[in-house]
Image 1 (cartoon, rainbow, N blue to C red):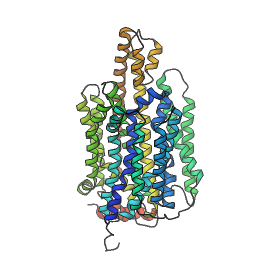
Image 2: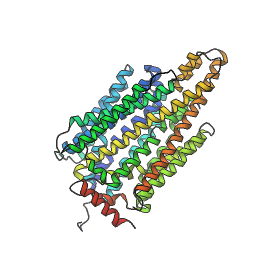
Image 3: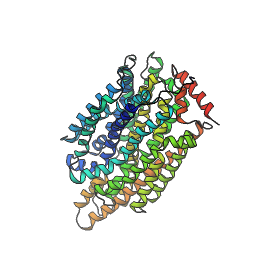
Image 4: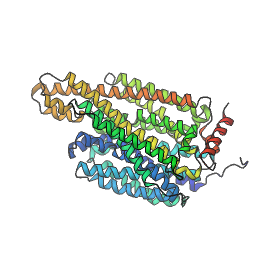
Amino acid sequence: MATDGPERATWREWVGLAVLPLPLLMTAADMSVLFLALPSIAADLGPGSTQLLWITHVCDFLAVGFALTMGRLVDRLGARRMLVAGAAVYGTASLAAAYAPAPEALIGMRAVLGIASATVMPAVLSLLRPMFRAPAQFSLAVAVVMSAFSVGMAIGPPLGGLLLEHFWWGAVFLINVPVVAVLLLSAPMLPAGRGAGAGRVDMLSVLLSLGAILSVVYGFQEIADAQAGGGGEAVWPHAAVVAAGLVLGALFVRRQLRLADPLLDLRLFAIPAFSVSLGGMLLMLLAYGGADLLLTQFLQTVLGMSPGRAGLLMVAPAAAALISGMAAPLLTRSFGAVRTMAGGLLIAGAAAAGMAALVGRAGPVVLIALVTVIALAVGPLFPVFTELVVGSAPEERSGTAAAVNDVGGGLGQALSVATLGSISLVLYQGALRDTAPEDAPEAAVRAAGESIGGAGAVAEGLPGEAGRALLDSANAAFTTGVQGGYAFGAVLLVLAAAVVGWFLRGDRADASGRREGAEAAGPEEAAEGAAAAADTRSG
């Protein structure tokens, strides 16, 4: 190891760091801001329940599916070039989505947004590596950009609520246009970088990875929907879709092992910091990523809040995520990366268990306080997980490593929306069937079971007290669904803490220590370097 310290960043790099959080802030807020807009979209465009689910998460599924491809293109063509191209497409698709005339058009534009957003994380993290070579500065830079992701997720609801109070639902997409304009105008401040010219992109690998992800997620979503519907719909076709996705996934792995220049170099998973951090982040997001959707719907439907008021209540978690995310370098220096990760996951799990117990029993202030605790606990984990994953890989493969990190995070987020949504829907429809008034028509009960947002419209069409009784049953049933979603999340968060604590036990190295050991020629050398760095920093 050289005795001279790494080159420290200049003012140009720090100005560039002020620009790089913008795309992460935009893409994260774009997903969470959609949660509040769903009732308005449903009322205006009239999508079916399946279409509404695809509007919600098709962007995330395709972002995950194309992340590895975009990561390879970042390594090959250069990070700045790919970031500019992706941002331009994202802004154009946002403009088109704002004026979508039908559910199919909106789903299509959300799909384009997903493909474009797949360039963001690999490009941004690849730019950070050459901009901030000093480990402490790299840690701070990762904390800044990943905190932007956390804040974007948290400020989406209040921002969306404010817009929906004064404008139509398309405004939640139009806000991306000026952000993209600022990013494009500021791009010359970022390092150009022509890329390493790495080998070709294997299109069969792209298709296999995309097919595997979409098949598995879609199949599980349809299985849950079929079981919840109670209409005797056969489940086996959807199970076959899941099985096909698993087969495609196995073929993808097999092809990567055989290719001389694979889309995903599986040797990266030999690095413990890489694989364990990736798994921990996936579990964390699977548990927590879709929780805001449940909470914002609960506040608006069961508690009867306006979108603006419900959104403003989410300011506290947004501030908490920002503060704790920026504190990530300090926490890892004080307690070590492993204790920071495991401790944060346990605290978040305890708060999620509190939500499961108190939703429907406590007022909104208590619920927001618990959600704020969750945000405080998970806020530092995004930059810590990301730095361990990206910092463990050789710099020339930072785009691919960032893409793998994006796959883990994006898959966890997308599956969380589908899984928590399906769990809450199953519980909601089951509870509604059990508690619906006896005099309520069966067709009305089935229609109310499509969604809690539609239950109000169904109830208004019933005469006398029958409508009010059905709405009360729907609100109670949805409360049960929200409780189940948070209980599921609490179990996963505790499981993630156990995984991180067990498989990285005895390793108190900070995140930057792994980056020093990762400046090797290949993944095997990176694994050895990362282990050596951990050994020297432990104890």
